[in-house]
View 1 (cartoon, rainbow, N blue to C red):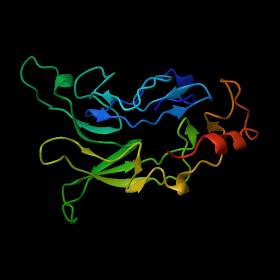
View 2: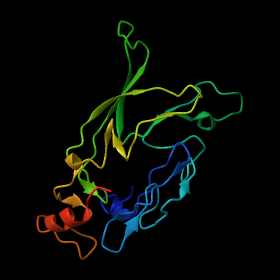
View 3: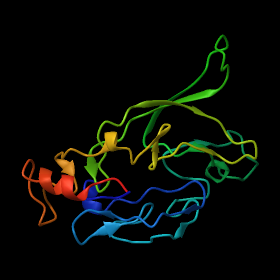
Length: 196
């Protein structure tokens, strides 16, 4: 989700790999600016549906995902047109590796994922880095790993993830008044950035 920490709210929102129905929650960057998930900064769409690949430069392109494409597409077909999501719902997948032949999960795809940060309109504290097993569903659809509502097998609303007030939280610092600079902003973060 796009918060003030993400280019002052100017960067694009996440791009879903499948159609998703949003919750009725919105996330505040200031007392008057709220944003729905998978929406541009300041756009509210509670309970709405966001179709797969909204905002992408082509069909099959989404973020927080492991994508695949044909190395040798049909004659005249650009490789970009063969892109498909294999697995998605990662905050920040940064490394992939197939299990070695002598491993019990031989040939399966492992994905390492950076844990969430305390910053933005949905700050999170204590989120672990994770090792995930990516595998496409039997029907050919990509499997989903929970970002932004689950961190591995843990619900993001658990108290262990409550923010403690960091300089990257949207309720801290500039450029949006009336936010206070860090550390004076900590009470504002603790009062406003509670799990939903």
